[in-house]
Length: 162
Image (cartoon, rainbow, N blue to C red; front, side):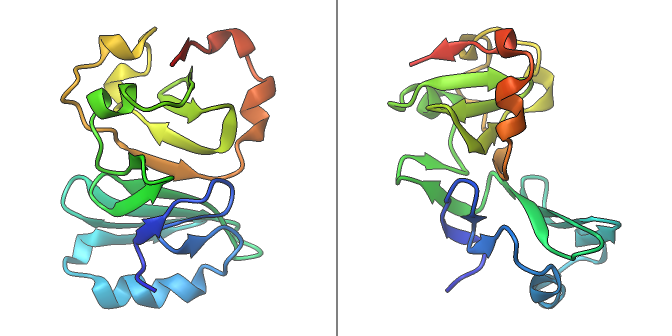
């Protein structure tokens, strides 16, 4: 099993890292793979491993239980959802997917699934449509976590596109 590649499973895993796993299971992996001193950063409840601008994984974890709560995969890792959504896709590719897209802030949820979100670049967090984002723009990453709380928050902030 290769870390940082493979299937994205909403609510459960991305890049073969699992929600609920102990953070210590991954710290040694990141330290072994570290290529630059600034690439690995850990501070209370947050770990970020980065090589370059877009190649990163961030893990948010419970400081007391040391369990992973969310996984954020940057745009250059080889992760995918249903062989359609992948962490290196452009906005044009995202628009062509068969999923209904629900927008909240700078995140896109697919088919009402709040266990995974596609993260858009921050400069596009106020747009009203995917058409306002240049087609060649890469998604910022993919977040896997339980984000069900968003369903009940400001439901009129969503737009829907097929």
